[in-house]
Length: 340
Ligand code: UDP
Image (cartoon, rainbow, N blue to C red; front, side, top):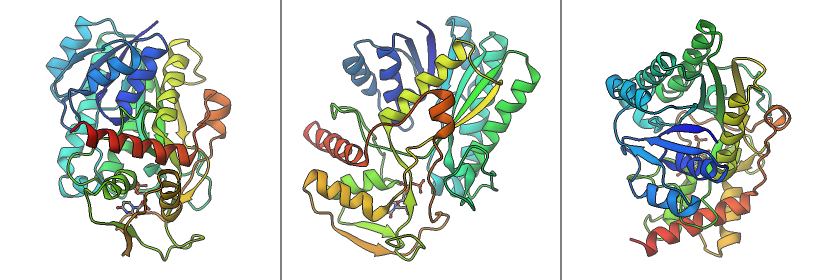
């Protein structure tokens, strides 16, 4: 059993990871400022895992609080989710993103080094690849100039960690590049909780289906893809959560092959927006009201992951299907409505 600090642990991916960590026998401590999540997530984590994590609410931008936390608790590893993630907002308020995502990371890494905490898993994103020339995207696919301040914080975050590994013989970081996490816990009791208008496809679909929104707009049907809509590698959030357990245990067990490792987290399969809608309609029996709208600025045409490295080296494989993703997301949306 290890003591794992999960920053952003009440958020969408963080809360699912906290559940899987506790189920794997680890002790979980959460820091979250609740800027994009609710305190009730702790009740859900406790209910679904059997144990309530230690929780402190503060901003990681506050270095004194971060230092105090690391002094108080004897942490074995950090999984760092805490970050702002709305691409459009990052274009409008870039400094919010640099402060929230990068000053915070610097504070965490500093406190780790002072307190001799060696291991960190970092939430990165497939957005670092932009639109690759060749698909699937491997971890060697060139990183392109970021399309948004949000994307830039993921690139710079990886570089910060790489630099820290060069400054220390023992500091180890694993960056996990997420493709498109969707879906919810099989119980239907934990899932994505967008504040205000969702930015991503799946919550937009479920909110439209339940009547919170009039219609879904498909952003572009003139892409060079089989049905003209953009293609992504959607991956079940619980599969993503499980990859974090593999990554953190790999570091704690001293199995990393270098001090800085990168893995793609995807299924290796690309699905179009229309295919996601079809899966949703098929699994739920609900017809979705949608129309075609212009392309969204900054969107790439298609991307999906090479999963070879994660499969072979991390020893992890996503095993849930698109139908399981869309059905679980619907179960969660209905649960939200019933528990309003
Ligand atoms: N998308 C859409 N309508 C929406 C939200 C998203 O057609 O209301 C499309 C979007 O253009 C992209 C795909 O769904 O092709 C996935 O978008 P999302 O924002 O979920 O993820 P990302 O753009 O980060 O891959």
